[in-house]
Image (cartoon, rainbow, N blue to C red):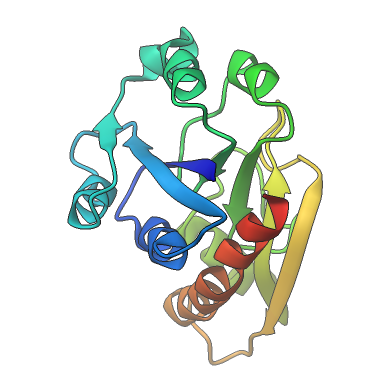
Length: 185
């Protein structure tokens, strides 16, 4: 049985979707949900599914304490699901090609530091893109520049707002993210 750790900073809809996907799996389980925010609703979602969870500080992340906890828990794959802090090099080295992220656009477009959530969808809208989607990629030392694992697109039109674009992208996230995670295990 493979152990998945989810790191998230917000409400946790993707995290909950992943937890539900693996609840009856014989292949993997979500062994941990952790957040850099004590008040992140993702921790409540984890509790509701009896998944161990905790919050940690930025210094816990940067000084390696979180990496040691993940190693002690024998985590096989770290999944970033709306996690907003940069992953330090030491954690990347401790889990080579075992940290993945989902980005709500078709990288390399609309990626990089500060490009998350509604900011991405507003950029897609302002650039007049006719396609957007999701990119699942390995995490490396540079925001959103890790090797791409999977992309899926959706059409958008002039009537779409940043909010409707977000809705279309979330459908793709929920449909494909757990399946891609499973394929990596």
